Amino acid sequence: MQLAHVLDVLQELHAVSDHPELAAVERFGADAMPGGPSPAGLRLRYETGSFAYLWGAVWAGETAMTVPADLPPPSRRASRAVVFAAQLLDAARPGVFRSWELVALRDLGPADARGKVPLGLRITCADGTSFLLRATSAGGPTREPDTEPHPSYRLPLTAGQPAGAEG
Image (cartoon, rainbow, N blue to C red; front, side, top):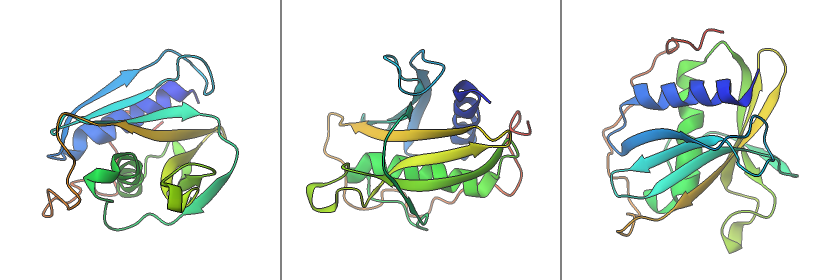
């Protein structure tokens, strides 16, 4: 499987999630494989004007994490984006993926929690290929809230899959 197909599946899952916080989900980058000069990924634009990016990366040192039931606050945009992606995968369970796990990445995160916060997603495809998506973020014109802005939101996905995710 190619990184582009992994990103296609995640882009569609984000689109059908109908999360009120997401204003746009777009692709960026040109690299077919992680680690190049133009990393391919998804750009998530939020209603506040901030961005999160999930992009193909190569990173030494991953620590698997349990996917939390609640999203981190918007003020922790990169962690929030990668946790939401893991929750989408848990809900949709796309057949083109064998497994996925939320990961902390060595030497990344707040100064007091380096390597201990979710900032990556390891996806193993049905054909055995594996990709790491790293999460980063960029602030918008306003300060992000420290509380959940949409507490009544629930994933509309079931154990089914979006179109095109079946393989």
